Length: 266
Image 1: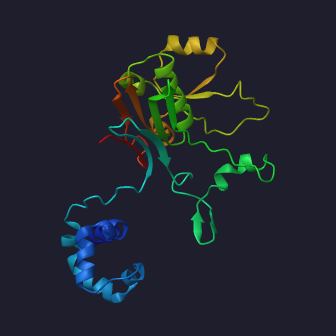
Image 2 (image 1 turned 90 degrees about the vertical axis):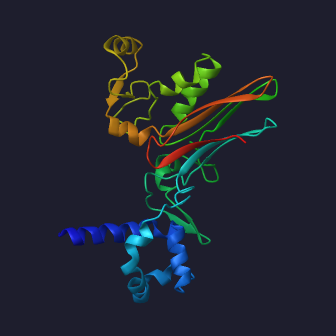
């Protein structure tokens, strides 16, 4: 491939993937009469109009272009002391899998990723949901809010909540500590939940700690950084000091690359 062909492919792919989010591209389309749905971008006329201007159309910041297009764990605290913790997600494996369309509404692979649960459920039962935002109250007032997204959202939420409520840990130290990860490996024949290995980051614990964990009867499996990147996810945690109601927050952003956490406080 020549350098000119390489550049052409790069620009064409970037335009196809991100161009419709860019304000400059939207203005160009409107000025040239390309309005309506996305089918106008498939015409020879559109290609002929856009091709000479690819560089200039792409040479502009995409303000707000990517906002809201990932799974997002969000905690909101307002100045009245109201607190919300939520997770917005398509609830699929990375990039999705086989899905269905019900009444014109696409449902990604909510069925595919829950196969193991569906075969054990009775008709009419609700499918268990792993999404686990948490609000903790003391004397009726919120003192802790946690929202997380990613494969390991439930174990990480458990670790964070326990560290604050039971251990009184410092927020930054707690969030920076080795995560608890879901073991995505298949079950071995006749393997129980007790003898299933717990996934841990490689190098997170020294030899003495590993020996102590083994002495407790918990087998572990060290995972690579790439595996952690794909399974940990991301979280946001807020502690609200009472009675004053002042929030203190910490978050892990974009650990998994396809998700993010957000703290919002006006």
